[in-house]
Amino acid sequence: MKIALVHDHLNQIGGAERVLSAMHGIWPEAPLYTLVHDRKTISNFFDTLNIVPSFIQKFPFSISHLRWYLAFMPAAVESFNLSKYDVVLSSASAFAKGAIAPSSAIHICYCHTPTRYLWSDSHTYLKEVGGGSIISKILPFVLQRLRIWDYVASQRVDHFIANSQFVAARIKRYYNRDATVIYPPVDVKNYPILPRMNYFVMVSRLRPYKKVDIAIRAFNRLNMPLVIIGDGEERDALRALASPTIHFMGNVDERTKKKLLAGALGFIHPQEEDAGISAIEAMAAGTPVIAYGAGGALETIIPGETGVFFEEQTWQSLADAVIRFKRQSFDYQRIRVHAQQYSRERFERELKHFVESAYANRH
Image 1 (cartoon, rainbow, N blue to C red):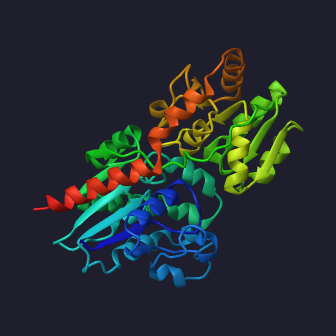
Image 2 (cartoon, helix red, strand yellow):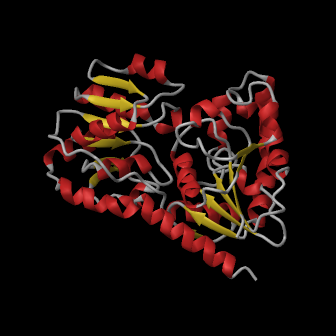
């Protein structure tokens, strides 16, 4: 069985790239086809991976300004020559699902989410681009054409895998396709057992949809320490919003992150996530989660046992949840045990079985 991996793009490291790393662990000889890649960014994760980029790699500023080339992406992903493979396994939140497998092969898509800026978040995406430029005038028409292409591409996939029941429902809604749920791999090992210190923690890219501003406003009002791990385009604006009790750590190494998670009173999760890997990592450290009650968090967090939910995506609702949280007690060891079911080993076992079964039953 010859297998090829296809991934949207490799110019950052996030949850999707950690899934891809686990796929590479199962099939280390499989080449990876992707729109663009940045060797410097991904070297620690994919130093042995045979990467085949698309023609967009040669375009000016394709790494730093990839979305300039949005209109070229369907043609780029369809240009990959996958004729010698028996299985095409795509890791997609955007264009990778559009890779064209040969008629004798099967295409399995591990879908992190239907493309957000084409479906559920298209209006938010247009707002972020802004209304003053020529691009902003053309972009709605580009997105409309890409939405049609995205739906057609989804119909070429033989089997969908979703990273949560939440995403499986969205795949059904937008693509009218059923999906098997295999939760993503999470690093649940080697978290230190530390005394709990007087701070809360969150791990997030500093982007608008992550709702970090809600957490900052809540902890400003509560006058409690909040440690924020991560970086992004909103860093300066969020720093300006923050009181002295808010501490920005930027990007940190895994050892430091695990220590900060293990020593915190609680983990703050204000955004709606498809799976919520960071929240599961916090639970692996024994740290209970205060989460917005939507998305994948509803599947992985047990209210009253491994965390609490807040119902409205506002700083007031989050602040109320923190106050409720402080009145409760949690069994940290029980939280650690709960998180073990999301291990990388479990993911690799389930995905390998799915792919091999699908290939065996392809005709």
